[in-house]
Image (cartoon, rainbow, N blue to C red; front, side, top):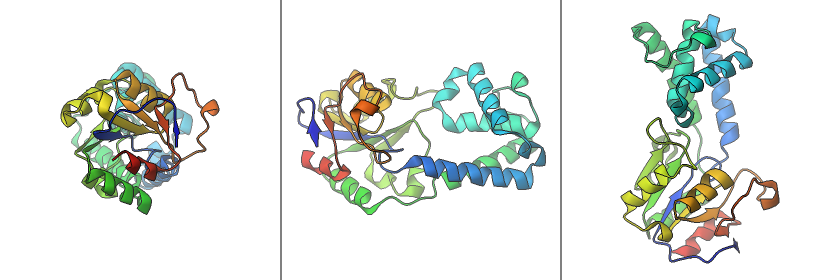
Length: 246
């Protein structure tokens, strides 16, 4: 553990999820592969799309409605709707489809991905640490992702988990940090936010008046290799070190 700033008494904690509590990249890669296999079996026309085609649809959706950049689930639904209906990027619509058959097909694809995306187990030290912390102070999750916390077994530790959406701008915007502080009824200066991303978590938390603990479970933690414009209050060596703040 390395301190860069003094720490006030910690009365509550907020947590990023992806790449803080588990390595998210291989999970997403497996889920994407599962989705493509499902599409290849059930939607032959969409299966011919290249990775570049999918990327163009994604970019077109965000260009039409920039709020979709904060909502991974809704963005995926819009892209799937275009792909399954054979709609090119330049004619993509972000409006919900009125075609019941297409809607059902999109739901089936999305659910196939979402089930695979949340099909993993947390390490025992993560369970143990969150359990100890949650018995002593309130915890809130703040994530830009859309993992199914109940399926993974995370929900039991958190008062609530806030997910970025079209109505909740993604971190580093202070929206979710402010919402979490309001739910916790704790002043931001006494909340410690734990996250792996120097910009989205560390900078976002500090801009919201929080204290920040930097911890990444998916890569070596070397500040010179990170796009750091601000230092966290503390850099953790292990997640278990958080129990020293209770």
